[in-house]
Length: 209
Image 1 (spheres, rainbow, N blue to C red):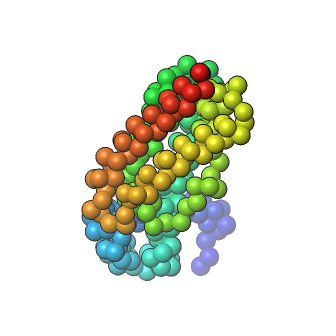
Image 2 (image 1 turned 60 degrees about the vertical axis):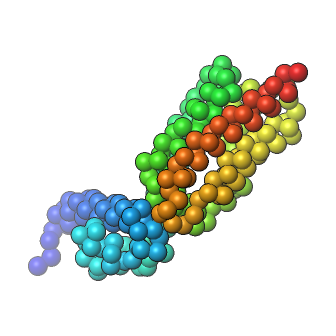
Image 3 (image 1 turned 180 degrees about the vertical axis):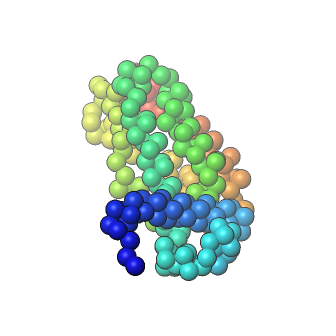
């Protein structure tokens, strides 16, 4: 017997919430296995066992391993996008008042903290497609424009690109698709921040001359 329409509609949100919860559970399990066993150790059946989810449900949401890893990566990208948004709320006067080192610390620390808390993201970062050139400079451009308003726009754009290249290029050297490099990558992140602060300080000193 078919349920009345109002009962069907009231049940829909519960089913959607249950489905979202199951997806999150599966992604959490995938993240755990990546850290424990590396990417090579992640299988659909292994994730299903870890998430205590029937394999049929797994394939309902994720048709294959690649779609599973992509969904986990997309979740990380969304989370880092929220960090972008929070940094974007900081006003220009605040950025102008900070020292070069404090500027880099303010920008980099939220991302570093996230990556330290989500080591699977570090591993995924080494294999998932992402083109830094397509990302908007965002906060970094805002900061450089505020702190170097007297500098030619082309030069300011160069400084922004150099800072981004130093960060992404340095990480690319150390990140590998294996769990053995996570601890080293965590330490390396701190050194990247030091290098960026030194570069920004040198540029600002030359501009002030």
